[in-house]
Image 1 (tube, rainbow, N blue to C red):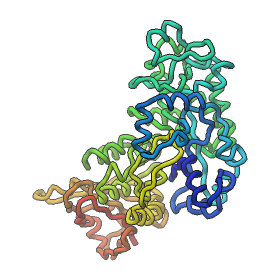
Image 2: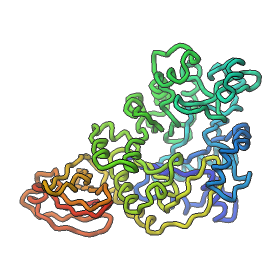
Image 3: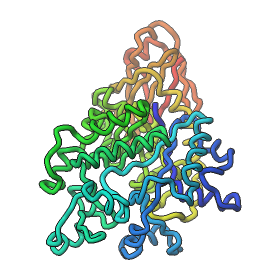
Image 4: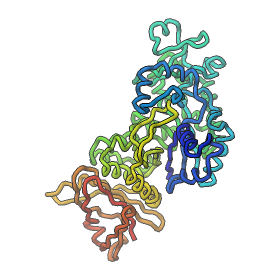
Length: 483
């Protein structure tokens, strides 16, 4: 099971520099820091934001007063030196020299590999910076406009070197001011995407593809209409992924994906797609909604990425300020099938979401209780998620409906059996959870909670019918190993 740990590379290296009293690059991160990164249960590191950022994009950001206001909200003592530009306004897929360049990245990958960790990096398929070399050397790879377009919609088009280009966008929001739109229907752009991703595959073990659904034929046609040109017979991602995997058959493809297009992107070649629906349900909806989401077929579930935060979302400690609810949601995402995404700072309870434009963040005291909880959860989840996963159903008495707030699932591995139960509600819940292992009949069983070390001795017959009786306070959980 893939477990990803996202690191904001620029901020992380800057803080390491303060810790060690010297400039730290990817090539000379101390060994003990890589040991810290190699947390139990984590097998993949996402170094977010290693590519060359755009000076032109930075200049646009510096002129954007609402954007600067958001920077000051996150970093009250903001200085202009703290604004480095967006890592998703890529000028070129070359590791920024201030981070250690290509040699530094190669050393970082080597250090991760020595600890059994894979490396994934960003790929931004939809747009490039306004000073990207393609705007002058390969303009046909981009969506073009006219002077009438520029005059009529100056927020949606930009002039660069005498040419008019469309600004990058998705179909539901205003254009992004600092990027220029690539043309997913252009044959030469598709070839260039294959070449770029093949190069990334030389440097990393996987790619996280930003807003991947924007390049799908139907979505792109809806966004750009006739400006994109003829509708290709083959979709963008099947064309690209098949050719990249001819060079890197094991390259991990992770899609940032929304709008219920996760299944379609899996079918087009992605290993994993963001599970934003689960995120929203855990934050805003009830147990019935979450249970319905988990009834999807196992193949689809294994291709999802479960998360409580990432650089685009509010910090989990702020979005889920009730500590018990936070822990319950964390147990859920950690023990479901599919990939898990953790975000640097999440384990320590950081509450301030840092705009990706910034190279420095405010100091926040660590939540030691939360850190200790995650220190137990990660190795427990690694032990649990082996073998076959199965969603279970809790039962209860007619006069006690609280069992409906209990979410439960089992994992059956070679020589291991685990059970997870989550009370997804703000009130106590009681019910029975029948276990799916018939051979428990007529034998004594011991259940050990991997988070609390508490043990429960039960009859195997009772565990089968009526099932394990649970009585959980609001937002409490069991992560049980059965012997």
